[in-house]
Image 1 (tube, helix red, strand yellow):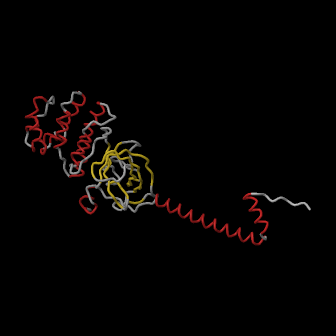
Image 2 (cartoon, one colour):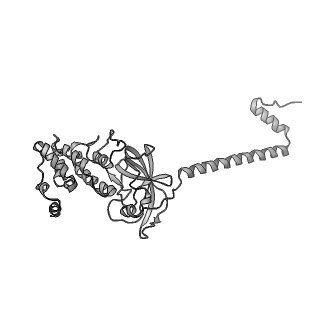
Image 3 (cartoon, one colour):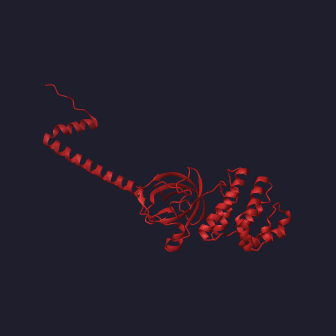
Length: 314
């Protein structure tokens, strides 16, 4: 009688087991195996779903009112912002469906998230050099100052941030008053030591030439920077602390680069830095260093504060 040779190895063993089992036993074992596979698959899917939801959860954030109202009516919001950084903007994505502002029913807002690479920290501890920052921008047609989200990838911005519901968010919503454009380049050595006044760190940022900008670009950035410094100082402190900025501009006004010197002189001559609180600083510098300074300062320096204010209007 001819016999069929059974295979060797794992395949042969399995074949032998199958041949030794009845059809009913094989069906039972097969059903149990399929159930185990299905159970394992379900657990895997649940784990992956939980991981995905954890990474993509929508934080329970509420839009801020206008910044002035927020400072005045909501002191519990821990203002001024707990974290101030200079960073470059990265991928920007929509997080949730548009919603109506809780402060103004006419406004439709959109919650978004932008990835930020931290270059410098001026206040607080961002905890990581790579951040995801949430913000509300307009989800409707809008005409006005630049809004949050109006940046380009790689653009350098000064950001004022708050911690809220376990995430970082912009310290303003809608209009981009807490995300200011910085044109003075990369500042690898700029770091605010503990106790450094934020106004001094801001003046250093806006009035120091960084890497990656030409002399002419920095000269233009001086004019823009002093305007930004004034805006941010007024926003954060309610006034402009000119002292350190005056010292920075005075130094720049003696630069051996004509285009930089011209911009610095312009800023000292007709800018906001000729306010009363900084006038004494300028007077002292004129007495000690004035003869060697190429700037021709206005006769406004000799006017009383009230007369100077009138002259500015004209």
